[in-house]
Image 1 (cartoon, rainbow, N blue to C red):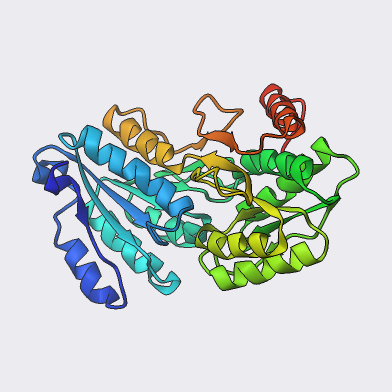
Image 2 (cartoon, one colour):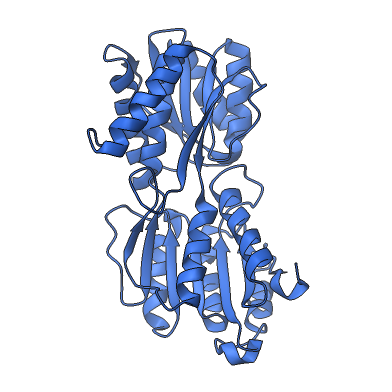
Length: 330
């Protein structure tokens, strides 16, 4: 990988200094980069969150490895919410394509995009019903489809007659995913008890996630679904302590850990690659693009750890029902 393709911009507490550094990287004219497409990827969270951001970063790395001769990449990570707009403005000032990860950035992306009509913007994981703007496309990873599968596996694999879902920030996409988890659980076991979803207010707080998980296990849940990124570490501890199980993801992990029934695999990085390739071949459009089991763009799968034939059967039936359109995730 060429160093020029790995220009990572650290965005910490000194927001203004980081913004100035980003601004100094060049102009939005690709000629300034020897004809390369200049792409800025905005990661508001940690690149090692074992979740949404890290999955996206894997795609960023693949772009750097495969398209380094055509693309000049830059990124920011772990940005405070109060600095989202400033960071996006600086990125738009220096790039041809800006990719923003996470629905928590939606309001700021929609404010910044109209200010830079010649820059292409893509938001990954925004509201499912979001309307594209003239230069803003929305890519939907269909997390709800993955959580429908998670719900089915959880219900079939739980040692009790109840399951539950723990989410990070209560964003529309996460709420939809929680609803889909419940629907998937009831699809596999109509009489299963689905506890009220919990939203801990943070995707990366293991202590809060552990507390929520312990509460659910204490209320009778035998298995949990989740979208909490780094919070999974706390949920693993809770599952071990309670002698219960959970479903991991979006990056598949180690099936030798007995607390995991399996892992949803949501490839956010594939959407980063899609956006870059579309900009390179001039097929990019300001549109809604779906990724998942029911999309030709794929991006969703499930890695099953459980050896229980009933769990495998529940997963297969849930996949088929979604893929054929026999059921909707939420």
